[in-house]
Image (cartoon, rainbow, N blue to C red; front, side):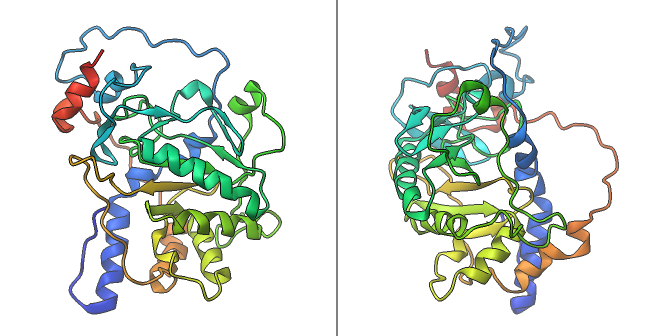
Length: 319
């Protein structure tokens, strides 16, 4: 995530981070809505592309048609919002303490580090009071840009975890495609909903943030506010948890680049503070809570293969 720095101490840093947030809003903005879109019980294959070799073909059209991982050594390639994934591993749709949602999307793929992390975190869920995790989107079988939803989730190191505890039974296929996660933010967007938010939510996010492989966790600003208020004296993990648009039904975990993936572009380290001061105040200004409508604009064409790291072509063309 790019940070634009102003030139005058703490105030400058606040301005810089706010400006960066405005510039990068498009990277994560669609996620909350798309996470609640229903899946389908009868997914159908996409039709073949008329000109798949045309350089103008959006990369999302190519990667979105790959239904199996590239049989290559596991590695992440590029940045979280501009890259791909070789040798992906699927998170099993059922585990002792997790269930995968929206199976029709086929987005339960990740780098082995991500799969191991999710199993590790889910095993801690019962200690927070939850039976387990409901896991949303990870990546496509070969990563890359997606046809719908996320701008990130391209390199197998991002995962959405629903803010809804797993029930003590196996969900049916229709439930996994159609049920919604729980909205935990109050209607005025200034705090969490006290009728929904529980200490278990804090403890689960805290457990994720304390994992050494985690680089960032994105949550709604109201959730960050609640975490800051209720964290107590153990606060060193809060710097990883950052507010972002949406993220009121789920939290988004992002891992560090794996040591074996030399083509992976890392997420810059978070600032040294816990993010609970004036930086957080920005998210509750009227300009953010009640933004003016944007003027109509032409849709952007999206990333093409030439925009991605060269190694992604090998991933795409692998058998």
